[in-house]
Amino acid sequence: MIVREVTAADVDPVLALQPVCFAEDPWTRGMIEEEVRRPGGIFLAAEEDDQLVGFAIGWNVLAELHVLQVAVRPTARRAGLGRKLMIALHEAARGAEAAWLEVRLDNMAAIHLYEGLSYAAVARRPRYYPDGCDAVVMRRKLP
Image 1 (tube, rainbow, N blue to C red):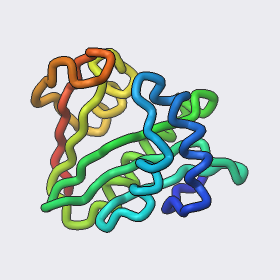
Image 2 (cartoon, rainbow, N blue to C red; image 1 turned 120 degrees about the horizontal axis):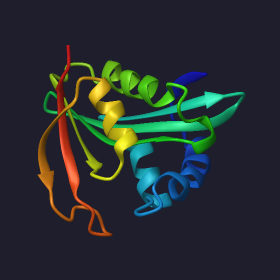
Image 3 (cartoon, one colour; image 1 turned 180 degrees about the vertical axis):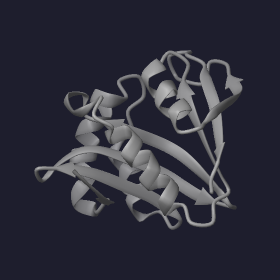
């Protein structure tokens, strides 16, 4: 498994993972294409056997990493890939002093992943997601 920067050729595979990984609120082609071009953006792909199996998107803004999406194909989960993508995001966010993210309150697998990476819950956003689910705001310091 390799982690690399996303290219324009990855837009379709990332788009295909959206409804599988984010059934409640998948991103559109336009949103993904915008992230591929975004200055200061970090968009990483995880590839195995020449197939995209996951990705991570973040913004490095004013000494902070804002984690937007982390996705792993369901058949590739529970093998440490989400952790590898998060670590790669942290490493790519040069100069960032802290990392922030929002995660669905009912996504315990993701919450456990983030807690294992030293993220701590710092706030809650009621009805943050389109289906009314709350978000947990999590933060960690970066070295």
